[in-house]
Image (cartoon, rainbow, N blue to C red):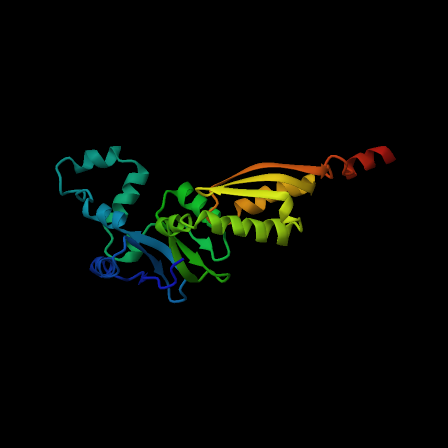
Length: 229
């Protein structure tokens, strides 16, 4: 994330917002209160909505008839466009993400809500930084050899306690292929999950096998309750 975040207060004027966007060469910024809690986000699209606002009733001879056909959401958007301060123009509630969230969670949140940036908040809900689509894409430029080394050291050795000589890790354009044999079946599943969590990993092809199936032979507590009846 970017920790040096450009922000505005809710009472910032339209011109204040435009000036800040131009000064920092950004397309949007969080609106915060005195405690640095995020109230909303104001972006270039919000400003353009204001500029394209429809005439107020009375400005057009057809305004009264148009108002009848205008949907509630449309009327609310038009009212927001009439605002003159950040608090009136901003999109709210803001889509935020916790500082401890993963890159994958951030990417999914951006995609789900169709936004370009996420204010990052700490445990108390205060603004800690901001992460953009460009920030997330930069993560995927990590060299394949660096990813491979991470998988071997962090997943195979440190997390699964496996002999790295028994596992072949191949990385091509961020796609990781795992081959070889692990001790138990549950570690095969865990190997995929842990590898997917590494920054810059695009996908995981798991071709691992196992010596013992510790999942199939695990005792189901529900079956024991039925047997005791």
